[in-house]
Structures are given as C-alpha cells and as structure tokens.
Image (cartoon, one colour):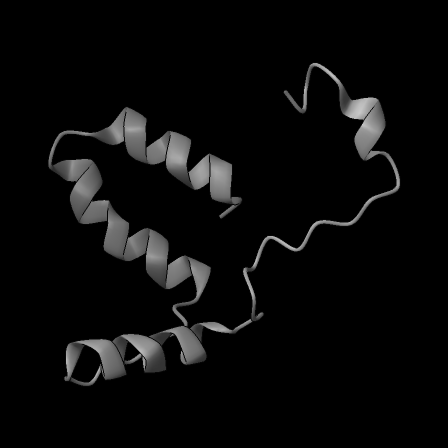
Length: 74
C-alpha cells in the first residue's frame, strides 16, 4: 500500500520504536524482568563480530553470511 500510494505519506513522521524509544540496555533489562534471569547487552565492535561470525562462514553458509555482513555495513 505504501509503495502504491506514497503521496499521502509525504511530510509525515512515523515513530517505528513503539510507545517508548529504548536503547539495547533497556531492552535487555526488560528481558531480564520477563525471564527472571539476568540478560546483559554487550556492544560488540564490528571487527570482533566479523571474527566471531567466521565460525559460521566455515560451517557452510558463506554466501548468506556475506550478504548479512554487507547489509549491516560491517
């Protein structure tokens, strides 16, 4: 629908975060409360993420992983 009739959306702002904008630490806190166990958010630098993902590349899904890395811009 949006792509078929985008003119009605020009100039409007949509908040895609839901009722409250949260960082990942707040999301982890909500998971902690809901699950009854500690969930901790760890911000992993891009280079570390790529190295950790290397094991997945070796396991036989390299094309899918390469597309994912390209999509997220690492």
